[in-house]
Length: 346
Image (cartoon, rainbow, N blue to C red; front, side, top):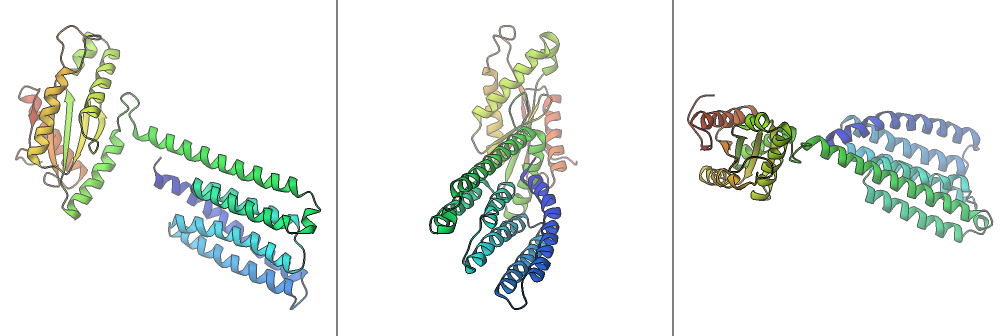
């Protein structure tokens, strides 16, 4: 699950939450009008506060409809914050502050734990708890009540919300990681490769960047499965994957493309440099140790096809077709070789 998908889930939450808040605010507005005398401070203050919150809620809903998730979620948290502390302020003008409106501070923290990053939730929870403590300790009426239990309740709710935010973020991160990783080799998978290559093609076209692509497979891989076992084939895949990861520089993106095929994206490279890297891989992979899984003298060899972005293709499909064609030529010409860019029609 990528970040876009994660935002889409929360946007769906906002799509029903914000109208629900709107209905509650309308009910509150009517209640404030009917329960406070005309032209009284309470009627003016509460109706103004609720009216202001309704405007924020409408703006948040419009932002949700336009897929501006960060704006929509921030406005939703803001309206909860303004609603709570606005009610507390209005009550204080009457000369009293009840515990009941104070309870709403937990709503802001809970919403933040669902919609915003963890560090923002921690900041909101800490600030509100600090202000509550100051407010209660400076109010004889509140100090006379069971304020310690109330502070404990707010603290526990805040901590649980923060923990829930952390667990949710961690699980989403793990789920995202598992969705883009190959379970056998630990390399990035084809889904990630295709999405990344598409982004590289766009950048290469618009900004003049050049990227290299290698498509390779293990020569005679079927023989390892047939002669030894599929478990041995899995070990070889894992060792080749580890070799590629350890040999290539950090900026290289190494993926398992499928079966015994691996695909690699090399940033900021040209034809000669790309060929040199591929040759280095082809030669050094022979040193991968197979003594514990295969007969003595067994060596791994690779056939590698190359392509350049955007020279050899401006879509993922055309570029990979180019690299695949070079890979096929390398195998047809005897395997264990690198096939650089050729001139042929796709």
